[in-house]
Length: 419
Ligand code: ADP
Ligand code: ASP
Ligand code: MG
Image (cartoon, rainbow, N blue to C red; front, side, top):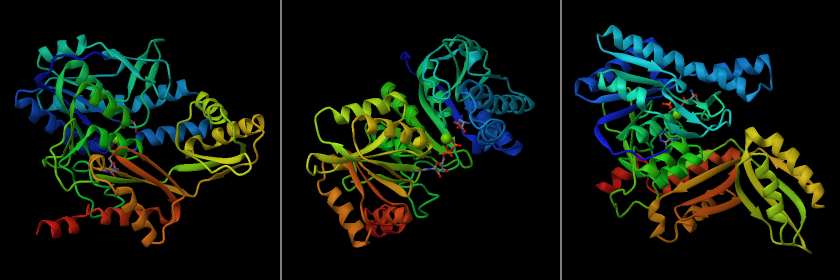
């Protein structure tokens, strides 16, 4: 993707599945888009499939064939966005405004050939620009493109965010607005922590950590691309007019903010290879072989060696668990290691904040509050701006709540501090 000169008058608005879930919602989005157009903006709208329709298509496919091919899955799930974008165009027409809907392939969103997880290589903007010149609102089906092999591809779950950011980059929009069912980015998932606070801003790096730990509100690669090309993201609700959260490079400094947000991930599993010979090259061999089957390994821990033998544990997403266990067993046999165990009963807590760069003792504070609450930590890993811990799944929610309170992120605590 190439960077374009920024056009202040151009805005990309992305509406997620919950914002176009039914007829009424589509009409509401139409009104909102029109009101931006009336303010003289050139608008590109990216839409997701209606409500949970992508999930429904996936479950229908799996009933027909439990192991459908990735190509046919892309053919199927890409239709969801085609429905919502054409309906939105019709709804705008009814209100007397010009709009045209396009699929990803029609506007030249060119991807590589990795079905279900394709990467955008480039976007041909000519067709969109022509329509914008004619003052037509352009609506693009999110989540999809056409591969260099001329096949329909999709960009991974939640990928409409990426379509929107990539279009903002390609067309030179200064801001990309992400409309969703919450008012912005919160200190924790508001579905899990009822007194989570909305943030006014968050840095790309912090958002990247939260998104890769599963904060579904933003797609990880969308944040990566926004960071690379310095596109400001404004995450806000499509149900209210309130300002949301700005995701940006340099966030204003607030002395006290050490921790910006916390996530709880409950869809990972831990795999342990027991009695691994402790010699150079073994870890490289194990993780190289696992990388070749395309699974993302998250945390890795190697135990202290006992008589030249050690245990290696790592976490993977549950959806890749079976194929990872199978491969790990093959690897264990090759390196003459012992048994391979797996445990789905885990949860990962990730504590994120750019302030950790300049404040020491955050990790110690996390561990001691967990200890005070009798929460045992199974694995730990840290980065410059984050700390993650694996705990037992049964106490994941409690761990999230105590850490959220400890760092003063809840509404009650913040009010008290401000008084
Ligand atoms: P959309 O359909 O608009 O793409 P998503 O369902 O993908 O919306 O993302 C919005 C959801 O993300 C919210 O309903 C919320 O429960 C969840 N979420 C997880 N973590 C956070 C967070 N830190 N801040 C806000 N929302 C979050
Ligand atoms: N409809 C797709 C999904 O549900 C893409 C998206 O919503 O962004 O994953
Ligand atoms: Mg989403």
